[in-house]
Amino acid sequence: MTDVQTTTDAERHEEATERPRSAKTRRVVLLGAGAAGATAVLAACGTGSSSTNSNGTDFSDNPGPAGSAGPGGGSNGGSNGGSGGATLAAVGDVPEGGGIIAGDYVITQPVAGTFKAFSKVCTHAGCDVSKIDGGQITCPCHNSKFSIDTGEPTSGPATKALPATEVKVDGDNIVAA
Image (cartoon, rainbow, N blue to C red; front, top):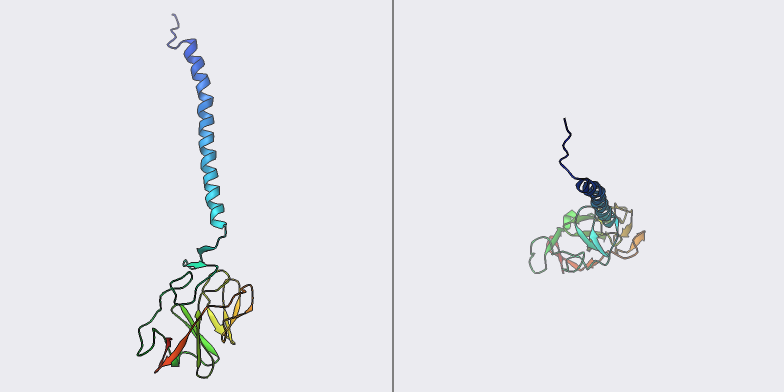
């Protein structure tokens, strides 16, 4: 019996030279996909002037005053109270020498009958402050502390005060002035 060849030497040579190119192409595609994935991971670790904080809300390194429509602010929470602006809290809810976190604000009463309101967004990295204790407002992300009287940082890493919002007492409520 005679062996019958169905391909010519030229076709075999062409097949042999095409295979390495296919393998190289696959390597290039896989390396490209790996590089794209690494770029995405590194971009997520980068820092910038605007990002998202740990609880998923947007923030800016230069937040606007609480209640403003600017960076780091928001709309006034609460309902409209009598002759004042939006109701932020009830007078009876804010302890003397302490404060509460309500809506977008930290409302404090440093001394009896004196109420202050500050943005709850930390000026260091945009996290929301979480605790008022011992005359201090504390951010849980990096342990920055702020005065309940002025909003100024008392320990870092924050170096800027929490933006203040003017408030007044209207009946039994603390409202934006």
